[in-house]
Length: 250
Image (cartoon, rainbow, N blue to C red; front, top):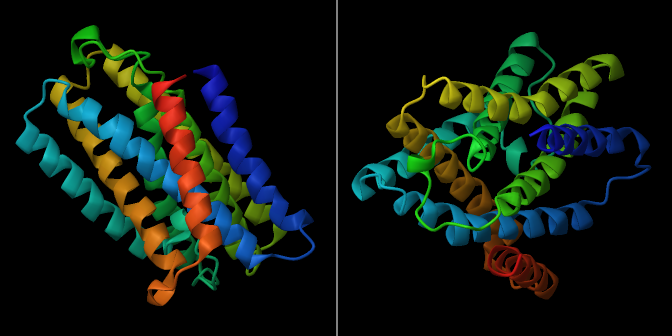
């Protein structure tokens, strides 16, 4: 888990710091990175996370409800954060303290929740795991890392437009710590028996619904008016192929 902490924290910090060193922002290339990350995140959600949740002993109807609630919850969080989770770089109402608090609250809750998914397979009691599951959760870690990088870059770009460099770095650090805190907190609650199996299922269902919302939103927004773009199609296929390779052959 220490390695996961370093990967999550450093990915967000380095990606956010690029805002101060990049001489010019290239929107086209950033969108391709988003499409790649969104395609990989969607693929591992379909190939790895959802099948595991529906085969983990929970009621299928309950798990379906949890995923739907997570999808709807992410809609609320993105209302607060204006979609920075999936790479929206635009002028946010961050000139006021209220705007900054709303922005950070939405992003922090989202990042904290996705970090909880990484406690799976390391601290969850054996009876909570999927029978016969032997795949590495590194596929999920990679998906979260791919997602956090663009999100951190977008956050730093938005904050630096209206805040000082000092406050931008402070808030970027808070965001970078959110997922690791979620990972360690859920692991602690599970090990202490505070979080029940049903609570674990609810938590992971919410995160899964959020992943579905973010990844599908990236697809829709990357192709306005349903215009065909070969480069985005190829990036999508490569990311999906990587997800399949990491799931079935690693």
